[in-house]
Length: 207
Image (cartoon, rainbow, N blue to C red):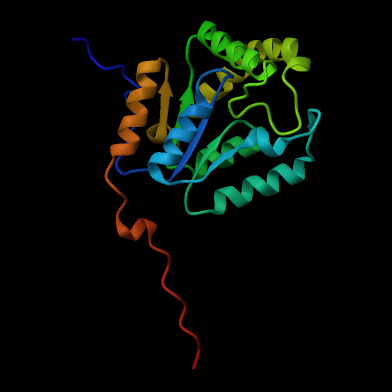
């Protein structure tokens, strides 16, 4: 038997996370991973695309996206899937207990993204595209965007993930096997200590 895929030598999962960020290029299985973790941990799943795109692929106002994102981060627990502006990504990294950076071989990203795209065009969407948006008009744009993410944004994510403040909580997932290991380890991690999850005691009222 071979060894299980290594996620990252510095990923340190001490307790079951309740704030999980999932990010990476299109077609990496991020949405499925988010839904599975949300179900396993009983956490709400938030999708950035659902707030940053209006019907007809119109961009939502930045302040609206930022306000929704801030509300998500303020909650006790969440799984957030997607990108958004770089300031939102950094804020999400800071707030998260665990970050899954899905970084499969580019060919697999393309294959899975285009397969999902074809299903959406055929009327069998699997949680994508966002409400009121159609897949077929953005086919060429998707291909170009994925190349830009790989060439320009992936290096920035690598740099962000490598910062000392984030390294222990980032799982750099390079294979499908590693994604399964991450999902298993997160779901089976020990529950956080009561002191981490219990609400703060009420402030006594002055007499």
